[in-house]
Length: 221
Image 1: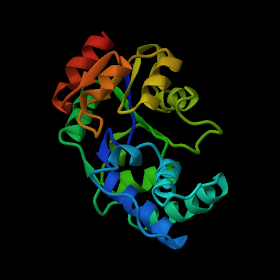
Image 2: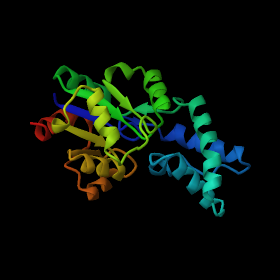
Image 3: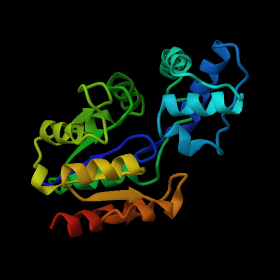
C-alpha cells in the first residue's frame, strides 16, 4: 500500500502562535520578560521548544546553559498543553488532501517531533485525529527525527509499505529523515522558510495541498 507520512508543526498545521506563547510563558515563569514574537520567530518555533528557549536566552544576553533550557522545557510543555489550540490552524486544503489520499487507498500517518501526547491532544481537538492511521511522536521511541526509526514505525502502524512511502515536511529535519529512511521527501513552501526549502533538494516542493495528489502519483507511481 502506498503511504504518505506527514510532519505536523509547519506542515499540517500552523502551530507557531501557540508554541511561541508557551515559550514566552516559560521565560516569564523563570523570571524573564517574553522574548519571542509571533510572525518573526515562526521558523524557530517549528524547530522545537528547546530551540525557542535558547533564542529567548540569547536575546536576554544570557549564556543559556543547558540546565536553564532544561529547567524551562517542562514549563513550556505545561503552558503549551494548557493552551494548545488557541491560535493553531490547519493549512488550507490539508484535510481535503488527506481525505482524497484515503479515498485512493493511500495510507496516511503522522511523524512529529512534538511529544506524542500533545500531538494526540492537538489532532483530537482539531477534530481530525481519526483521519490518520498512525501517529508517532518525539517520545514514542528512544530516538526522534532525523533518525529514520520514528518514520518507519509510522509507516508500519499505518499498515503501509516502506518501499512505497514518502514524507511530507517543512524543515531540514524532515529532509534528513527521508534521506536516512531511503524515501522521497516533499517539502512545503507555505511555511516561514517559503521557497527557501528548495535549497534542501527535496524530491518535490508543495506550494498548496491541492497539488499533493499529483506529486504522490508521480513519486509513488
